[in-house]
Image 1 (cartoon, rainbow, N blue to C red):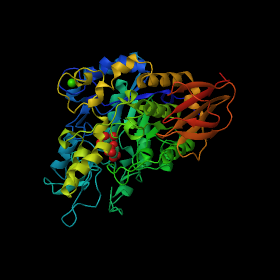
Image 2: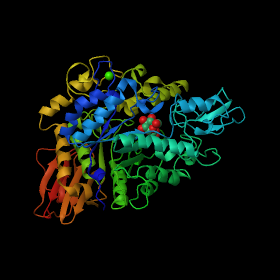
Image 3: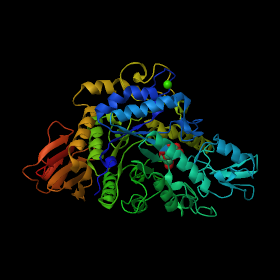
Length: 554
Ligand code: TEU
Ligand code: CA
């Protein structure tokens, strides 16, 4: 397997708006990030992914960009950004930007010109079609609810928006659009950024003729807008735009299965270095992202293991359990009450010992939990607000809707970072743009910093171990006790060296059968004070994580 810096990196995701506010306006900002770089450096992360920080009217918190070469005023200035990038590089940390080019904001000058006249030079920068029988051109639905089309009165045609009406889809068929994207990429690469996380990048090619979707429920039309026919060509263009730079490409690939993604990230013939896939975060959802169903741990481990096996030696995994679109992982896959510490650490062990690059969502390293705001007024996320309105309009009981929002809302991960016990968790001395999770008195970075057994210090240790042992990065993946319904057990093999990891994914004791372990094997890290040797019949406590290393080879 090829050695690359981004395989050895640990990513820390910063949702700037909620990270650290430096000027008391209630909104996190770039100077706030600079202030906290020593914290990230000590944690050991070495690659920062910034959610969009470009100029934006914030219909979807920055995923609607009105100027790709400017910084959102609330976040600071271009000088602040340059200072941040420089400060990262001086600490040997890299930084990647979010590249959002499936769509722009409707307030982008391109769209303003595009909508102004059918013969505008910019008309074909977007996807315009005449309506059909007094309705939209086809039956496609948007990710945020409602039809994927809006009628624009100025020219009497509809434009496509797979997300909000304020996020019109760019028309990648137009070579001028592709060249614009290349110029934007080069602008940031020439500044020195180290690559991109590419937003919904497998949606940029749509099937010719934009046919009606066959699936009347859910995301109607997905078979015609995801993984489209010209995607390979467009991916090739993006890949070529990166040549000459030592930059990483992380694609966010929605509605794509393992085989499809394996093609995109194939080390020989693929286009992306790695992909943020959705299969494992869809197992506990029924049809939509607001329909929670019980998760069988067995399905989770089977899914993760399938991705490990398929990509081993052929492609590269993004390892994540949460991000700004997903609920908090300890609340979702662990138990944020009875086993907060144990389950947060077990999930961390999982992310840091599988093959791939771990992605830490800000606050995850201190075990931040889901929030449950009482009133819909306290929510900010467009998809949550749309969902609420849609369900209320269809006559559903608001209390039942709120319950699902508590479990599933994207705002769960967007509450302010909990730095300490001071006002607003030390995030801001002003009024935060979104409420602080009331559990900050017990869950915050300052108190965990002091405590050697904290979740924070467990993350630091895991990251250090990853840097010390190439096997954790490059070792092959072999699963053990595959039929076990609650234990996820595997080995990482690298030459003579071997790491054995056994994880209890459940809240009850669970037993497993492990092959003998070499006599040289020693405990490496675990989330209970003492750990059993993981061989023969072994009993794990709730959410226990055991790691043994046999490093004869080094
Ligand atoms: O997310 C893509 C995406 O598919 C999500 O909207 C997903 O459907 C939803 O979060 C499920 O809960 C990316 C960004 O990560 C997201 O923040 C943006 O809203 C979206 O693209 C549009 O740019
Ligand atoms: Ca601010």
